[in-house]
Image (cartoon, rainbow, N blue to C red):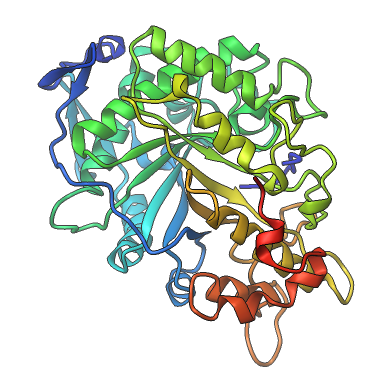
Length: 438
């Protein structure tokens, strides 16, 4: 999500919660899920942040991401016509209109076998009572983008967060698939640049990460109570050993130090299941030719991780000390895209970048999904044109397809090789094997 501002790129903690039945597992409390199924598999890694459901289905996407605003979900007034959830002796109600709008996206996608992920967000609301419940009390109104950190500072905030996720996980993991199915929940957006995308005021990395870890623990347990396959993902942008250069140390921090601290903290408090949603945008969001990125180097000390050195993130997450129950945590690429520069070759450069990135991701077994941003160009992205479709209109098609559209459509089909061939000389390689990161 790049809107309004571009950024180059154990149950004992749950106050008032009655624990579910649990069994011992490697020294931790493991939750028994209400619905037990294996994690679903798909034919490819091709994914999209979906804006137009019918078009996404026609494109053959296998993974979809949808923004989900918890502040639009909650009903602190408690209107009786809204669906309810019981937790800790309290009744929590949720806005049926918002749920219906999300069902209209989730159900048709999941009915086609598409794995749906929800990006959990808390946008500052015009309703002060909602903000008090859902936004961290230290949220700064001076911050851009109106995106707050989750409220883990108050008992009411913690209970609402848990109730939201238990309700959502139950709704979208029912065996009858009445409302469709969700398999992944991405906690916030690009939290290593927290001032911009997950605001709790000006804070140090440990202070922010302690609060975020608390939210992650609540959400992970809430999901697992309802379904065995639902996954929680942490969200990071591409600054790895440096912070976002336009921010200071109380506004952003390096992704690597965050993950290392988060992993230590979660183990100290009793490890739980979490995974990673990473955003390997090019170092310059306006330059799609990521293979020219000078700050993405083949070393663990790399300033940034982009598609050029994407194996650095799989190598990092492959370290045994980061494993959960003896297995590596999973990685998805939940938001990244390529700008269409001005000029006659703009669409060609954008499409070539996608082709190359797709081949790189396809070669890395530690990555489960490559979810492209975005579906349609958006005027509020500061001049970035990242879509498969443009905003231009003509006599033939509203939101016309760009060159990247057919590359995306054919990426996981037998027609990929012919569709991708034009990109080889643009990138400067003779074969796709030549360009893979090792």
